[in-house]
Length: 151
Image (cartoon, rainbow, N blue to C red; front, side, top):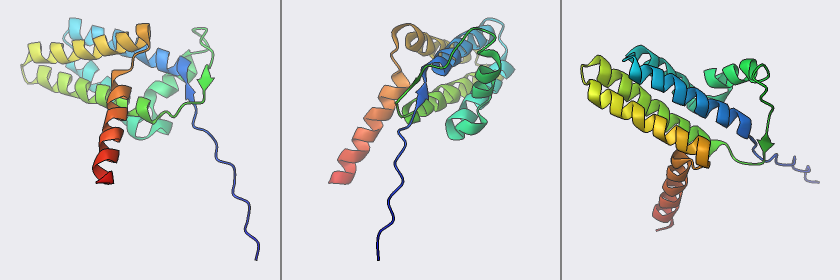
């Protein structure tokens, strides 16, 4: 009996242009939510980010990028890079925004604003310096998991 040839494994790919679009969107929408004290905006963006992190195919931000990107002159910049770290980072940001919106709704406006400002700062860092703190967290957690499982 002969073995069937295995199908070639396709390298995971990431669109850097989509990541920039997401970071810009997060900065400006969160800034609006914090300045105007609009917890619903933080909650909506946080939920959209979490959905995109868990089920990337249904990401509202990805849909917005595909719809608005060409009109804004954005072109795909696809690289061979595993997107899982970026999905994790998006989930962390989405969680912070949900916490921000809930804190603001609960009357803890300073805490809500602080959480929103953290998201803005980290998205701006990613946008301007290409430093993804959530991605660094992802790789550290993977390293820790490997160390714990190796015991």
